[in-house]
Image (cartoon, rainbow, N blue to C red; front, top):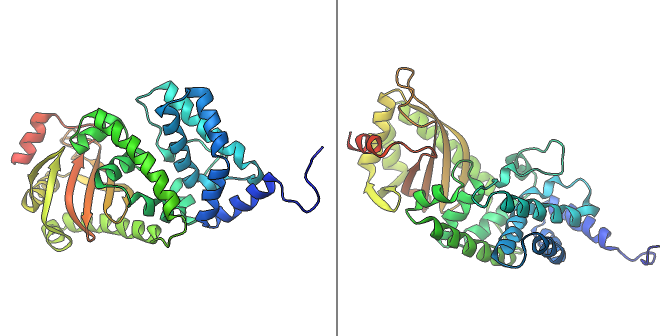
Length: 326
């Protein structure tokens, strides 16, 4: 028998109200929902992983999933069970393979057929809140967190380590710091006005398409000169290989060889953008390039200040040296 009196809201009534508000873009409602169920989420993590940093990581990852997946909730009164399910999935993923990451975009939701994350984020303002919090992180922590949780092909520790030019252990340490600081930043920015991440992402998609089209028209150097920093640096790991001349020459050489790129995913913040590309090599040289690449770009005032080109399936070192020397 229920102990609630007539007219007194129950916990499920509160969850329903908070979920519905969050689905319309009320970030404070989602923050309150997460806080109300944090104890239950932690209990699940501890029961599977035991006390320690792994349980803390699972909870923080679950918060990110919930933030991006709140639009999936069909039964708002069952929000607590939904949040605990996300934690359980995170914990089981850690137990299956500590080195394997399931990107947030691929996490199974409780829908039989859920729309993709981009479609979900079109429906509410949660990405503005998330990006505002991410922008509070240091550049090193921001890059590590974004690659780990938002990219499609640059998610493993060893891949992120190669992009950043640091040991894999440093990546793990940075992720731990980033998760803790992100949780604090989410709480601090819940009431703040946020920039329009959707508009910024759409603009970055347009820029990626326009950059490639202009390059194919033989004017990539003009794009670099007009839109990128005069001191732009091409990075390989933690080392600077050269500037705009090398970047332009590498692109022109690939195009002359018949290589084409097509953007398949764009991640856009105020200070960091990632363009993930599918690559088509020429028919007479199908091994000319790996099939995918990521343009990881540090931004300064909206202009590219540093570019890291990363191939999830890297070229042999000798081939890379030959291409850069061409």
